[in-house]
Amino acid sequence: METCGDDVSDPTMETIGVLSDVSMASRSLPVGVVSTNFKVTRGFGGIAENAKVNVDRLYLRQVMTGWDANQSDLIQPNAVTGLGKTAVNNWGVYDGAGSKAELVAKTHGMHTLAGKWSNWFTLAFVVGRYVEFEASTLQVMGANDEDEADNDWAIVGGTGEFAMARGIIRRRVYSITNNTLTHALTIEFFCHMTEVVPSPTKRGTVGGNRGTLPREMEGKSQRLENVTIYHVGAVEGFQFSYVDEDRKIRTTDTWGRVHPDPLRKTEIKFGPSEFVKKVNGAQRGGEGWLSRFEIVTTHKTYGPFGVDNGTPNFSYTVPEDETVVGFFGNTDNIFVTSIGVYTI
Image (cartoon, rainbow, N blue to C red):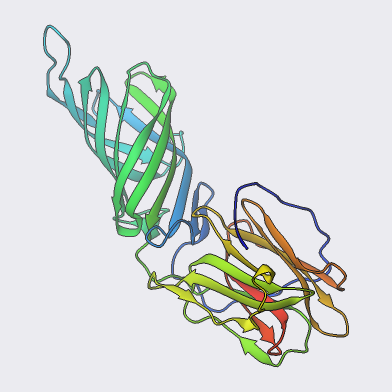
């Protein structure tokens, strides 16, 4: 039986058992909240695009005239149609709207009046709060009317830490004062970050203590692709595939045993924007194996697999800025006896 994500489901379950956090290595890339308005989510997207970046509360200042102007006319408009006016720009992007805000990036490019103002520029991050992204750029294009209060610009490429970026910038007019037009920007894009994927954090295990055969994945997973579970009255077998640090798909051996009845096999294929955020289950008391297991993603709940009469129950919810990228555990060669998760 094969299943895939569609409906959103997030059941509330009491936490009776918990998974502990065991840090495997320090992270070599910014992960999670870099600052109050800059968030990086690793393990996002497909094999090539391994990160999603969200930036809000940035402000682009367009100073049109005066000693501090940051744009200059290059071509004057056609006298009849008014079209063709072109200016080069070096607009500044700041982390706040006030005079004491810090410069975050510069926009090097031009804008041309062709019915609308068509903008093409390179958004280059500068040394400062986001030192991790120094010299990284985004390639941006989009159009807007002079009196248009809000619209979207497209991110069509990137370099450095933002290689192969694609996404959007949501722009709205924040204020117009004298010779300055200030735009509020919210940025969202996917990209492939070029540094080595950080080592996952090991959390767990939970379940019984009967198994004496430890099971581990190889390499550093950055994304969970699919999970296969063999189940009857317990979790008999467990297998999963994942994308490693070299962007290759690896598949583990079956932990436990392969049940001969195909109706006892469930394969879960996760969608490109679907991530495991919670695992629930139960241990069968004196027998010491997993009697029930359930996976909760950003899209839906899979399971439960096994039976519901095991005790004690356990539940673990992944921190908001992390996702499950793999598993580890123990078996007794017949059943899965305990399980833990890797997160980044």
